[in-house]
Length: 214
Image (cartoon, rainbow, N blue to C red; front, side, top):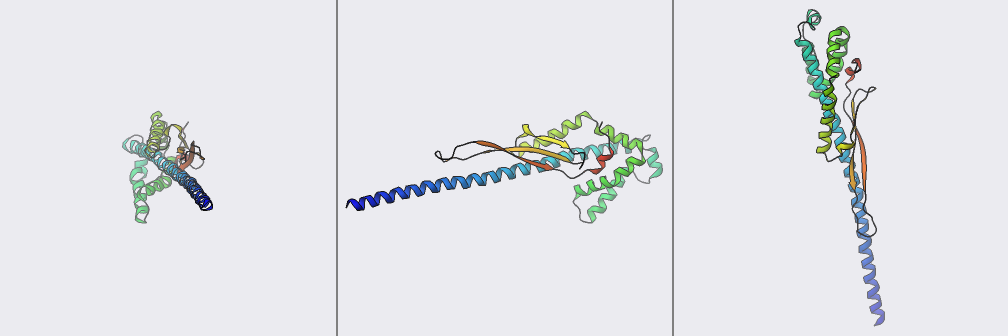
């Protein structure tokens, strides 16, 4: 009789031990999955933020082109030489790329990369207009603000964000992190937090290589 009771006691102990071990394994698996989710979250945030920053530069580009095309004095040489404004030439090139199946935004980026370097070399006043536009002190603030907004919307850490315009690849590069907090079983696994850092980059704006930012 005592033997049977001992066996039952041992069985209950092993069952509890197995349940406890299973709980620890479950928490470990959940933590591994959570690391992956937070990493993906940071990756998505930086990629989207880099593209948001790129959009700010594209808007500045369009503004510079518009200012030049609309100025009868600055654009006189260009109008005497070309049948179309620079904006129209960019649009024609972009439309051709779109007809070939390119995404609209990427088509305009490619069109800028193809058309603008030639025009800045040919028309010094156009190059100066573009440089004046990109030297605008508010532009850097708009760039950072656009990036931080996207980082915040993706639950990453906006206060730690780093934004640079690469002068080798001529693209917006964003570095940010998202905070990971471990789940704990209350016994074996201790709770802690860690920042998972990711990098994102926008498409290259090669025409910026022709613009002096100093």
